[in-house]
Length: 50
Image (cartoon, rainbow, N blue to C red; front, side):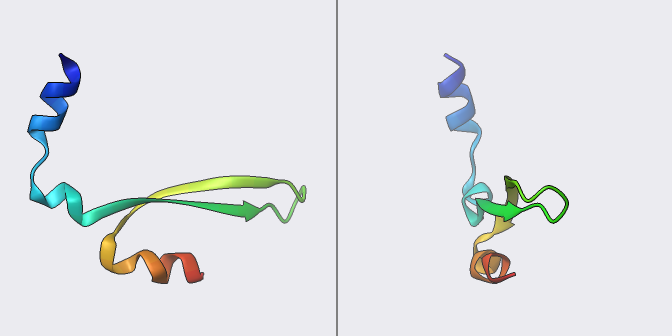
């Protein structure tokens, strides 16, 4: 039932954003971690280029 409620609440505005997951190496330990951010669709390539 919850899935229906969440799906029906989505409007056109929510589709303009994407969740970007980027693997980043920590300078302190050298280990990799995942950086997750919500970015507007127009800025996805720009965000990944950093």
